[in-house]
Amino acid sequence: MTNNKNLKLKAARTLAGMTQNDLAQSVNVSRQTIVAVESGNYNPSINLCVDICKVLGCTLDELFWQTDM
Amino acid sequence: MTNNKNLKLKAARTLAGMTQNDLAQSVNVSRQTIVAVESGNYNPSINLCVDICKVLGCTLDELFWQTDM
DNA sequence: CACTAATGACAAATATACTAGACTTTTAGT
DNA sequence: ACTAAAAGTCTAGTATATTTGTCATTAGTG
Image (cartoon, rainbow over all chains, first blue to last red; front, top):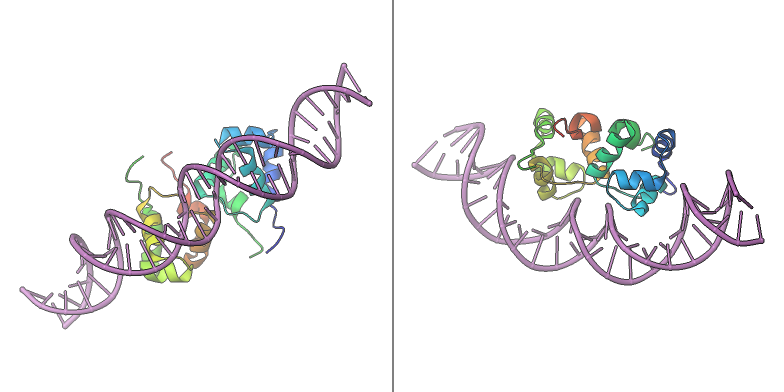
């Protein structure tokens, strides 16, 4: 339940050569929101997840499906 | 932007032989929330979407990826 | 060293997802 | 037509996602 970081998202972002700030601006949220999503222990909206996927060229299943539940 | 119903979810639910109330109880939300998700114009949390997918045996991409955006 | 960019963490304020209740309308069965 | 279950709508309240601001840390660079 604790410390459930979204490492796949972080990897996809860095692979795309984007900073947290870049991604935040691309999907029109604050940098804090990106930090929170990557840090886990957080429950973002589906629309935000979809926007992030589109910017990073990934799918929802790739970035937001938890295998350890 | 208007009237963007999630017909795929509704189809998957009925295919599973579940009412809105059944699905709501299965994922521990109110029936209103299920109504809202199916009716579109709504932005549910990713956790709720994942829970719904698990109950209905579907993936996030199948139920929550909008093709018309 | 000083400077900047990037990340991570904390807290208060705001926007909105979700709840709870009551009600109307549709759908399906007899 | 009658009935009941299921679906849809509205409103007010509560929980929480998201914002805004600030500060600390790390890594690179002149």
